[in-house]
Image (cartoon, rainbow, N blue to C red; front, side, top):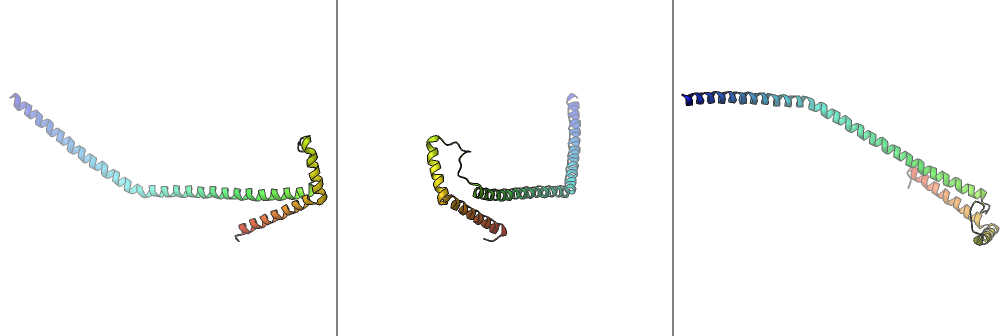
Length: 150
């Protein structure tokens, strides 16, 4: 009798376990189907937002590159303008004086002799005039490059 009750109880427990396994399988299948359905509905929306994000990041990259190019052009143009002004200021204001430099007294006499000789012969003025032509040639080349001619 004990074995009969034991087998009866075991069969009842096995039946309940199989029923819960079957019910769990159905719930799992329903949940997987629901997830697939929601994913299929929301996939285009997710792809749309990913596309918008990609577009915004690429537009930002383009803006950053444009700003870098503009600042680079300003740096080049400003360096050319500053160089031309330095050239013209040296053309107009070179006196051969070394008051703003510290030259040891042993070299001062030699420096003064060379600058006096250059001032008398006009070589310093010729050098500065040649520097002006070099700057003008550089400016012409920059304008040609900026204009698209090569």
